[in-house]
Image (cartoon, rainbow, N blue to C red; front, side):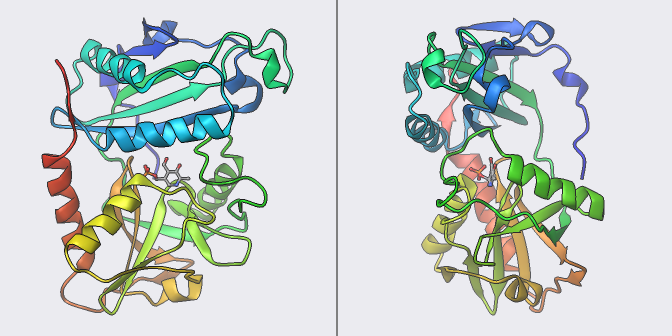
Length: 299
Ligand SMILES: Cc1ncc(COP(=O)(O)O)c(C=O)c1O
């Protein structure tokens, strides 16, 4: 699955630092920390019908990541919300929009790893693109040889820009001709796919891995919340890839593609055993949430 260019994005305005720029003028310095070391944190946020879905949860995760990375001069939530609203207003984006919100450690006085070289505070970048949910109705996966970080190495709870291990896993998927790759944790249990969390359904129970070695996704949390409030059994535990092969249904979750069915893993077909699809129900509940919840746009 390869995203396609949407011509509606030709003339979008992009926020960098404290102002908007035309797409072609929006730039960061070669001395910016993002360029120098992937030293930045980010969030993907989606706009549905005049509302920003789960905005506060995304901002909390962004703040927590920036704090863990000991960024200086982190903008306030109010500043970020205002910048986001201004960006969406400039582009007249009220629906079908995905926002990549990045906070870089900022500009360095000279190249080098030391954060003390960053003497201008962090840089906020807001890229709001026309982008309806990007996945096809179902996707195929392989298991990557690349493992997902454990907190022993680099805590996956920091949503940082240095996603090289996930990118290497995606390259494996590309060479295998499938859509994405499942990453195992260092003990061999399933952690997540390279850019999305993963769930399986077996005999009426929904399972997903702990967040020990994966991003605690906001869509993942929403699905868990939906299960709990609708009395659908949900279990968070170590799940092995063998269990996924014989699941009734498998799906991945993320802001970019919402809930997407998985039709095959490592060549094993995922055959829905029951007439009633629990995934279909979850998708309906999720859709209702995106229709009824969110921070209302102020323009
Ligand atoms: C590695 C990884 N896993 C999972 C997700 C899904 O998280 P969310 O549901 O918060 O979009 C993302 C999204 O950025 C991600 O980068």
